[in-house]
Image (cartoon, rainbow over all chains, first blue to last red; front, side, top):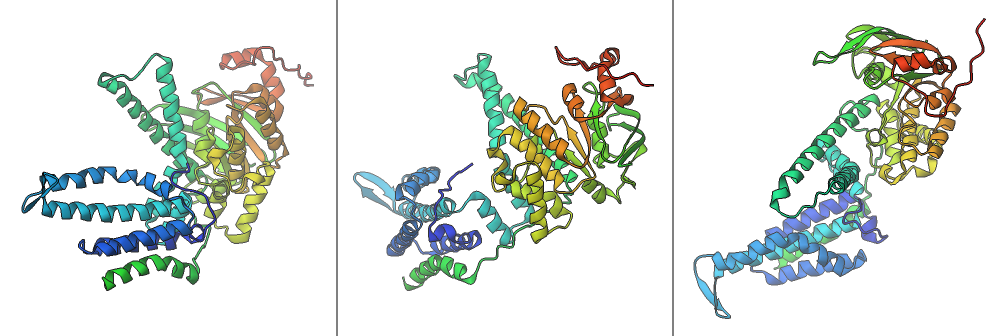
Length: 245
Length: 247
């Protein structure tokens, strides 16, 4: 499972994951706190993200393509000016709500910046490292364990899913329309039960090796102050922009 | 005695009785094959050996320690259970973390822990894979790492559930070489009778929840009637050399 991660050796890649996590969250907070009328502040935020992209040597296209995850919000945002109420203006013969336009801009600008920052984080940090970072930030053990197992078993479960698909198709099943949905639903159910049973077996294996509810932490990867300072640059620049504007 | 099972009986919560009084002793350094048809209670017996299931009647003693709540931690260190599907056994993101899981739970840290991990991986010839994620390894490699996860806990007895299942012939032979090289007591649950013959001097047949036969592997496998009675048979074309008559 590689996911969004893009291996590299830039200063951003080398930053400790917990520093990057904190930086992205703070950046997002500043962006969200920015009044929507301050257009140039958003422009500067975008420019600072572009600078990070450059330093991380992540191709711009890589980030832009992955912004597609935002599409559902975009559709929603684009609908608001049409369905919005209140004062209206004519744009190229179409009547749009002024408040709706502002709301759409607000959602689009802030979501895009937040998503782009998260993509950069994911592109420069291995999924496993992200979890270790979150663990250092005292995210509850249980959540970390669940996410760790998900990472480990995603491939195993996908494999199982592929085998079931092959088994279905080997017996002449071709999904054509909704009428075949029950078969797929039953497959999903079977997959769920198989995964649940695997979970039980894994739990037994863990108990057999002395598991008592907490994962042993093996690494003490405290981040040096310089790393925190480096990671702080992005949120500090962003808040400076917010205060000046 | 490394392992002493006395008169062990067990019924599952739904009332199905799986074991009807099993008595089995294994001395230090022995390699014993536990043979039996499907549903004979082999897995149920294995689950008792490290306290995952607790005896309904009778008792299990590991190296002098009765398996009970107070001794659970120590018993689990001494009994190394290796499950059939290495994907169940290897649940951590990297081989290193996985092998370290057991000894870390036993309280090892730092250099001591690293040493235990590396030593265990070297014993199974997988030291090169230490930083790889388990799902990038071949099935045979995963099974070897699974053995290492248990070896790292320095167990008194290694209990393997169908160690040769799903292995190609070369991986099967490699695993046999590794198992033979280990200085540890082994209890091997298997249907692979030639594998039992190759690795274990002694075999036990568990059938219908009781020990039906216990003796030198050669003698047990040469007794076609005994095998047939318990739904066991040698693969086509195999024959066990006739054991020398006992005097």
